[in-house]
Image (cartoon, rainbow, N blue to C red; front, side, top):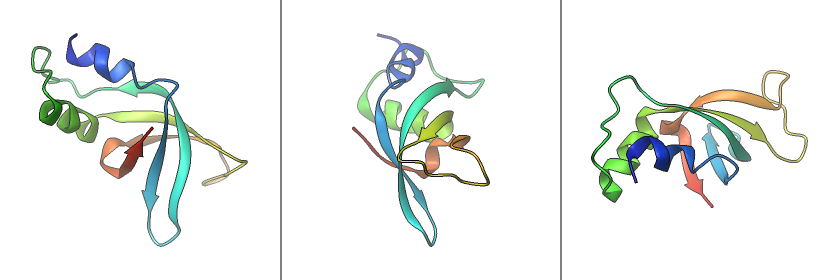
Length: 84
């Protein structure tokens, strides 16, 4: 499976987004926005974690959580602390 397919496989999964100082917010992945230079052939776990960190994601927050008045945001994978 290539890297883009693995990233797209995150859509529909839940995770936690770290924020400071509020803690973490639960969310669901809605879309993936990978970087332009995403390696397509590397599929080991370290490469996948790096691809997550370098990508952006549209997420929907759970339980009525609003950030800047919205329950959906485009966020950097750098701030994702856990994926379920």
